Amino acid sequence: MTSDTSPLVSVVTPVYNGEPTLRECIESVLAQTYRNWDYTIVNNCSQDRSREIAEEYSARDPRIRVHDNTEFVRVNANYNIAVHQISPVSSYCKIVAADDWLFPDCIARMVEVAETNPTVAIVGAYVLHDTRITPEGLPYPSERVFGRDLCRQRLLGGPFRFGTPTAVLYRSDVIRSVDSFFNESNFHADMEVFFQVLRNRDFGFVHQVLTFSRSREESLTSFSQTVNSYLPGMLYHLLTYGPEYLSQKELAERLALQMKRYYSFLCESVVQHREPEFWAFHKKKLCDLGRPLSYSRLSWVIAMRLLDLILNPKRAVEALLRHGARAGSAA
Image 1 (cartoon, rainbow, N blue to C red):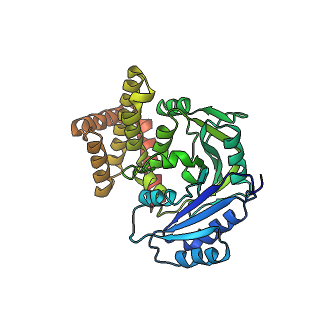
Image 2 (image 1 turned 120 degrees about the vertical axis):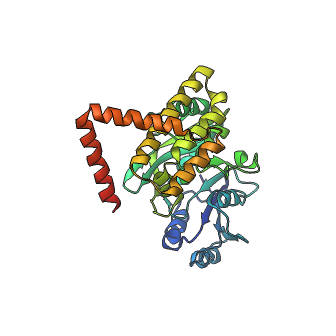
Image 3 (image 1 turned 60 degrees about the vertical axis):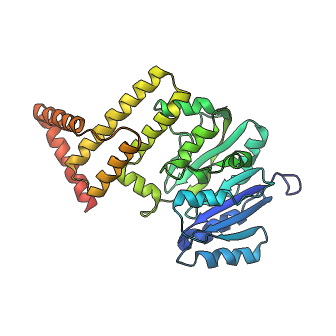
């Protein structure tokens, strides 16, 4: 596709203190084989040289501009500000986190799938996440699938086939159709977008590694892994979208299983002597979801776990060894 005939893609990068990786991120956008794009870097009151780096590139290329937030906002709020910067005539929006970067064919391959399949609202692809490939993606050679089917599969415990915002391309019209694209109260707002958008739209997929994503200890993903926010996140998605995507029987079974897993995890966390902030997080999440932490249920799960260990000494020793190994690695 040439820039004269190809649809406009608005690229956005929300950044806060991204100096170590921002230059690499911007260079990957400049290296795209797809040429018809504009690019907005949203600086969230960074305290390092992120703003200077962004302005350096903006001075070189008229397609790049810098938006400065007047005050610091949380991650999801900054993503909402970023997607609201897209051009009113753009056909697609490509988010690139400041920690990440794009392979040269990324935008071209994603736009190709979207243009070939007008019912597709979101296009995904494989990601090189540090040294591993994610997500599971679609079965090869599938290029398009009913979005509703994928959402149902996910709520029923199926594989994660979507990806983070850097890993996907959105049609601009789905962003413009709502005031707040990312739910700022949800740690996993990027996942919620799929349930919202794919009700009556399709999901496209490129069977190629098109983006690179790195882990950072201070990132929202790292925090989510530390406290396991995925458990209350899935519970929220089941309670919010389960009635729309699942039968009553399916929803009841999935909720029962999710709560069982949740309390099993909390039982393990008691043994691990998790910090007060951990418990405050989960108490609040459960309360917000209308399912306050039940100490009697947690006590019952702990009692059953202890009984199981007593009746199975070998399992008890293995559990102690695992706990010791975790404690050693944490130290």
